[in-house]
Amino acid sequence: MKYLQRLFILLTISVVVFSCQKEYSVENNGGNLSASAQWSFTEGSAQFKGPIDTVTVDTVGAYTFLTISGHSADKKDLITLQVFGTSVKAGTYKTPFSLFAYARNGVILYQTNQQAVDSFTIVISKLDSTGITGTFSGKAWDSSNTYKTIVDGKFSSVFKTTTPVPPVSTDSGTVVVWSKAGCGGGTNPINVTIGTKSGTISKFFATEPSVCDSNGGYSLKLPVGSYALSAGCGGANNVTGTVTVVKNGCTKVFVDVSGLGTAPAADYFPTTANSNWSYKYENGAPGDTLYTLSTGISGTINGQTGTFSLFTDQDASGKDSSLYKKANNVYYAYSPAQKIDSLGIDIPGFVYTFLKDNVAAGTTFTDGPIPGKVNSIPGNIYLNSTIVDTGAVATINSISYPSIIKVKTIYSFKVGSISTPFYEAEQWFAKGVGLIKLVEYNTAPFATPDDVLDITRSKVY
Image 1 (tube, one colour):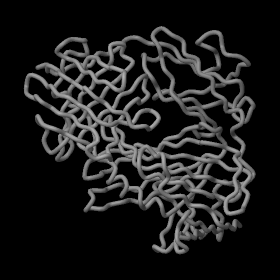
Image 2 (cartoon, rainbow, N blue to C red):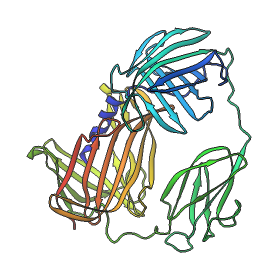
Image 3 (cartoon, rainbow, N blue to C red):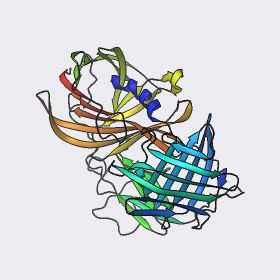
């Protein structure tokens, strides 16, 4: 669809503050709570404080980033403060040149809005070879996307003179992934990946195994930590999530793929030749109507097996083309290369997943990292998608659609440990019809749609 052309312009506008590979150029006492390494702030009646773990200085192109990281005394909370510029020294930094984020158990509690100019301030009152001292305050979103006021923020750290060596944990635990049935509800094996380790589930259980080395389930021992989990059928990652390994513990994970492995009777995004669709933006002018035609022309893209079908899209602003294909209940699109020297954009062409039609609501999937440059700063693009609903019913422009899958995708640009979301799209697909609704959000936290595109008619051959 034509909306893809706008993504990288939005990315340039939205992505302002980045981080990068840490050089550990400065660091303090390793996280021990002491007067020489401390941070604190207040929000409402709540007070927060703890030790500073690291202070790092990084360089990306012409920019310098200073990042302060710390945790709470119970180590459940993490704080990040960051400033950047062509040089970093004692002084005042306001958004978008300052960043504040605070998380508890991996969930963001407070985070600055990088597009709200001057809404948050970090003041570095001292920065030299011995340490750093400063204050911070301003507005930040909470977990419900409501602005909260951060006050009395303070930080102070004494630097080490030696390069730190991160400790290596020898603690480990065991994980077993099990299922009641295989792919398609039978005994076909299930493919499982945890982190970089892969295997299969070949034996199935009516109830959770009583031991962690269940014969037939997928079991392995891993160092303590959190790992990405995926499981599925036919080469697709139909179930995704995170598994946490605890010291000397046994973590049991149930996956259900019994309903997978069978294709629906009709595609949710048909590509047959001469099929065509018309759309209109809500509250738009008559000339905003978008007409899309599947030409039936196909070709191989980016080394992908199978062929892509060529679509042409036309509205008042002109005509362009797009490429799509389907394989094993997974739908793919091709995003062409983008190079805009004046904006410092250089993104290669890439193929991404925009729909899976045989998975349950709540299923997630990710495309990336996709390397590129924005504002001439190198980083990676990620597309994080969630199946919001399956089997939904809706009426659009007096036409009833009885079987709908809703997919939400958030586009982010990541440099080092800092990921900046810059666009969200929610797409509705009807079985045998295709895309029937597109809801676009151009500004985080993606609470109010910027555009809504509705189908007005369709003809599928």
